[in-house]
Image (cartoon, rainbow, N blue to C red; front, side):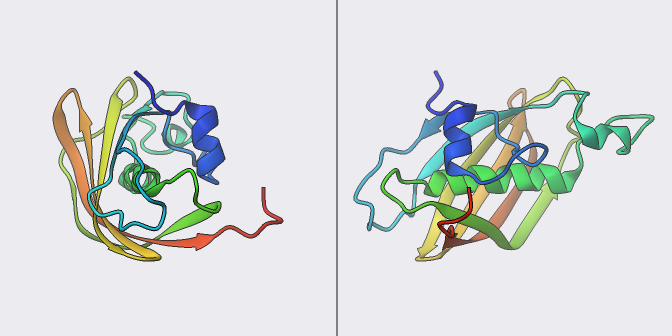
Length: 157
């Protein structure tokens, strides 16, 4: 069951093709008080990897592999969704740092990547989020992402 479809996700994240890397959200922790600490909030969703994505024309032409930096970006986007609350102002999230990044297995066209993110530390504008990516129940990547949020300027759509 989907919690957020692509049009819902586009209302939350500012990313657009080719950098919107979440296709669907299947789980979000229940919303509490908007001002409450968000440690422990989780989001789970998916990214379908298809051969017609632009990165596969050059990475690598002889064997299409999802670039690790894009997999990391997809995990970070899921982390932003774990932080989402419907009463928040429109926010932008940027990667402030990454730790403990591991790429365990290549992700290739035809894979469906399940992305999981859980907020471990909430320091207001800064969140430390544990993220992982799985394909067919097997861990393919993980990272601790430091996310920094800021209110989106009103004139940006």
